[in-house]
Length: 143
Image (cartoon, rainbow, N blue to C red; front, side):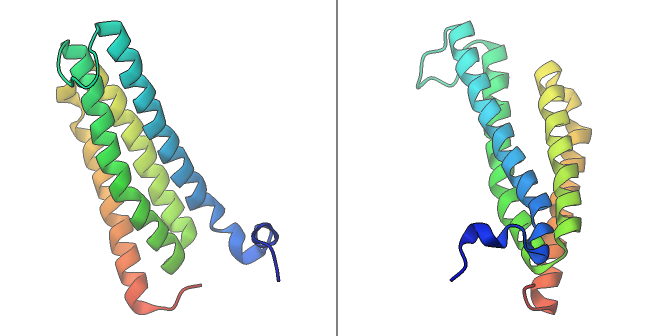
């Protein structure tokens, strides 16, 4: 019986490292927003469980919640698109999503009204992943 680690170097499995890296980086992005809220609670004196107070705290809190909502939607479609479709395409679309979400976070922190373009790009990447996963799921067997 082969161990799970023996599959990592298998050429068929190497293609999945790219979307797996994007998944890990997406979780790291979410974790950074958690730390951002913790910092903002201390900085602006907003005691848990309150989620309102200083306007800057509220903006940082909304960034975390929006990121959480987006990551919850991303991870399943990224995994399905990578497994049933093309893992390199899934990784590329995931990269676009991740970069757009970082741009979204930065834009929202500066000026919430400026977050629209980054939101749109991330949303389109996510829709493309959903389309890839759906088409691949119904047109072929897993790799």
